[in-house]
Image 1 (cartoon, rainbow, N blue to C red):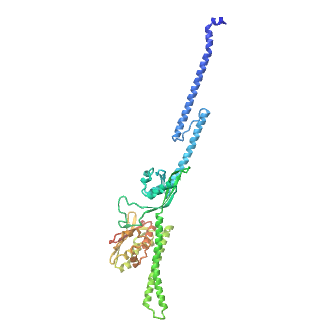
Image 2 (cartoon, rainbow, N blue to C red):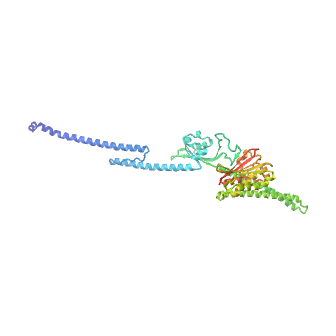
Image 3 (cartoon, one colour):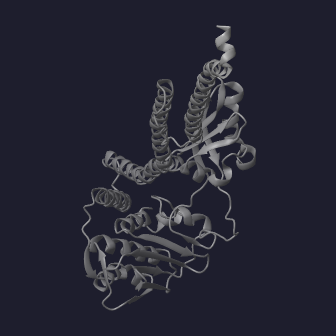
Length: 464
C-alpha cells in the first residue's frame, strides 16, 4: 500500500477532495433553497402587510391572494373573511345611521344630544328651528356658548349631575326682529293673531353606556304653542258664548217675569198696555239677537265643515253682479245714516268663488263699515286684480281701530268696544265668518287701520 500511494500521490489527492466538493455543493444548494424560501415568505408577508394596511385604512374591498403554504393561505383567508364581515357590519351601521338620520330629520319634535363635557354632538332640523341655531356652527360647541335660554341648558346639564331626567314646559321668548323693522301690527296692519312666545314641552334623559357610565344627555322638544293657543281660544269661546247668550236670556227672563206678574194681578188692577208692549218689545228684540247669534254660529259651522270635507263648490263667475247685490243688501242701513256707498269694480273681472259665501263675507264687511261710520260719510267698495290675486276692499271713514286690537280682530266674539258693538246690534262673529270664508276660498283677509283715519278691510281670493 505505501508503494501505491508513493507511486501516485495526485490520484490520492483527487480521491480525497471528492467528498468535500460534494459537501460544498450540497451546502450551496441548501443555501440557495433557503434564500428562495425566505424571499418567497418575505413576498407573501409583504403582500399580507400591504393588504392589512389597506384594511386598517378602511378599504374593506381589499382581498388577499390565497397563495403560498397552507398556514399563509389560511391567514389570507382569515383576513379576507374578516374584511367581508367588517364590510357587512359597516354597511349595516351606515344603513341604520341613515335611517336614524332620516327619522330624526323628519320629526316635528326637536332632538338634541350632548356629551359628558356638555358639548352638542347631535341636533335635528326641528331642534335647530325651535332653538334658532345653525347646526354647522353649534355641533361640538359647549352649550353655554350656543344656547341662550338658561332653562334649556338646565334640562341638558341637570341629568348628568343627578342621574335623573327632567320633564315640563318651557316658554321661549321670541326675540325682536334683527333688522329692527316694525312688524305689520305696529304699522296698523293685521291678518291673523300675532305669534307670541313659544311654549315648548321639554323632556330630557340620561345617555348611558353598557357599563352604566354617564355619556351625555338627550333632550326632546315639542312645540305646543298652537295647542295651548287653541285651548285658550276654546276657553274664551265658551266663556264668550255663555256671556253673549246670558245677556239676552236674562233680558227675556226679566221681561217675561214682569208680564207674568202683570197677569197675576190683572184682577186687582187694570193691565198697563204700554208696559206690556214695552216688555214684549224687549222679548222680541232679544229673541232676534239670540237668533242672529245662533245663525252666525251655524254659518261658521257650515263653512268649517265645507273646508274639512272639501265640499265647497267654487265656480268661475264675474264679480260685479255679486258686489252689486251685496251693496244693495246694506243700502237701506246706509241711507238711514246718510252714508253713501261708492263702488268700483273692474269690468269683466272673473274669479273662482262660491257666490253665496263670498257675498255674505262682503255684506259683513260693508255692514260693519256702515255700523261704525259716522253719519253723512262715505264707504268705498273696491274690487280689482293685482298680480295673481283678486282683492275686495271695503274702506270707511270711522274712528279707526287701536293697534292693540288688530291681532285678535278676527277671533270669534272679539270686540274692540263691547258696549258699542252690542248697541249697534253686532254679534261679534261677523269678521270671524269673513276670515273663514276667505280661507275656504284659499285666500285671506287683513285689516289696515289707524285711529282717526278709518279702516280698510281687504279680502283676497284667487282669479278665475
